[in-house]
Image (cartoon, rainbow, N blue to C red; front, side, top):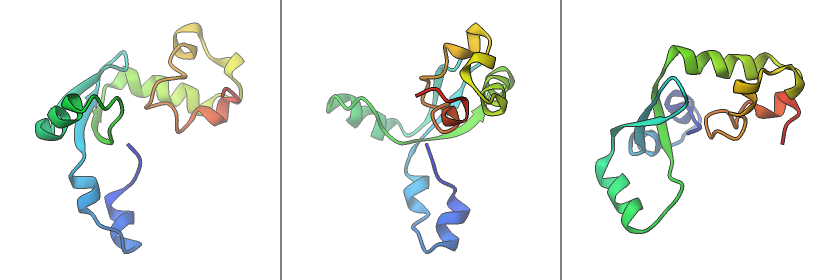
Length: 102
């Protein structure tokens, strides 16, 4: 889920790396909503692969609020219970170190 196609191009990377990923949206409670890449998803399921790269197309406004709360917290103690429960979510992983939670 990481990466920016523009920076890949600037750094001599291959933009198709990002275009070939599965596309998902994220709903209000952090659920992944499939958008595109059905062949890749099907093969991953057949091969029993648990984790695959995906690009996030849209985040629900309420979910983005959760991400912002985590990003702004200096420790996990500052988070409300609902937000704290999301610290293990894959879309929060890139900002969790700011909370001191591992």
